Image: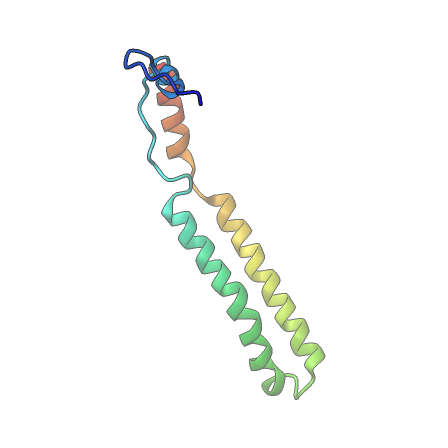
Length: 108
């Protein structure tokens, strides 16, 4: 049987690769800010609650049992929530990441 040669002065493949790695600061900021996640969760909840609630509220009180009109109202309310999310997402301020990116370019 062959034995493996183990010389203390030889470096392993991992150690060789680490010797040439550039040293840089690690960016530990999350990829998506927390306020964006909270907005998404809020609109997700609204997308589930608003159409169902509007259906059952309008089914007997406004449309007198006509489920077609109550379903149309629920679909309309789902679209209102979706458009609201799009408007909020477009108005979101992203100047902070832009400034950080410009600063990092200047540092290089």
